Image 1: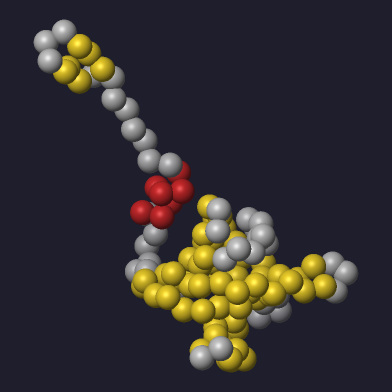
Image 2 (image 1 turned 135 degrees about the horizontal axis):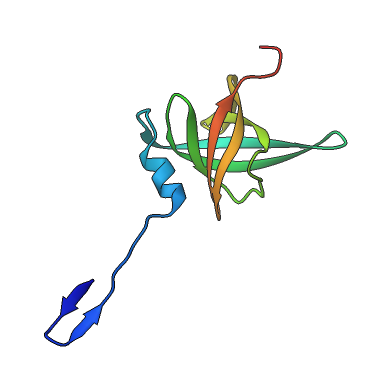
Length: 115
């Protein structure tokens, strides 16, 4: 409890949201970057939705990106790096959405099944 003046008392308390606590505890170094991406979300039966996105930081295990895509936590999507507007086929990765806050997403890299 903090005292303001001589006769007014106020109680202060603050706790960081869990998402920020998780972010602060990451072990790997994160590199800030602005890189265009293409996200392909696979739907049943056989449909694909493609979205543009911008990578905002990455590490060995995952990345953060911004997009107006409607992706759900737990969803696995295909990420493709775009250089000068072209997709580099050798720079594709499967990612799993692990965090979402409006148009900002956090994802981890996943291995394809059978790898």
